[in-house]
Image (tube, rainbow, N blue to C red; front, side):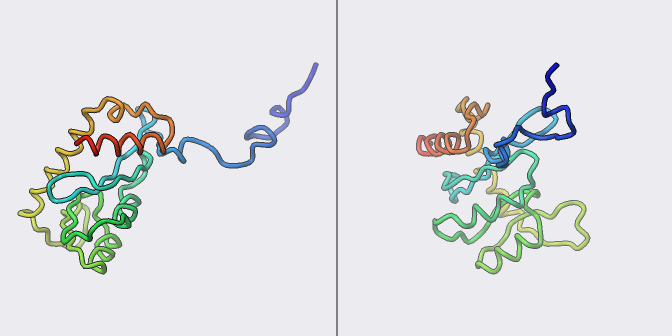
Length: 161
């Protein structure tokens, strides 16, 4: 009877495959419903998309903010975002760049941070932009297996908008 390598206390992949592979490099993340991904978008004042960043579904929104601000487009006056982007580091980074953060504070914040809710009302344009993007079935269901092809189709859909 032949013995296999996997039976002798070595867990992991087969020999020769020591590089780290997996779906995390392709922007997939594990959740209770399966594989998911988050689309972080930067839009102009009219709700037109300027650029995208893709992270796994379980990854915090904090990680997507820096990549959005590094896009080579005009510097905005205000940064409208939801509560997922509320952190001191992001606020300090935005103020250092001369951008006013319009982010409502999370409910578990200890200090009260003021938010301009009159300006925050304009964030519905970004939500409408995501709704228009999700009208493309390929984006809503994430059929693409690679990050590169999914981002390419996101850019095509943004041009069509």
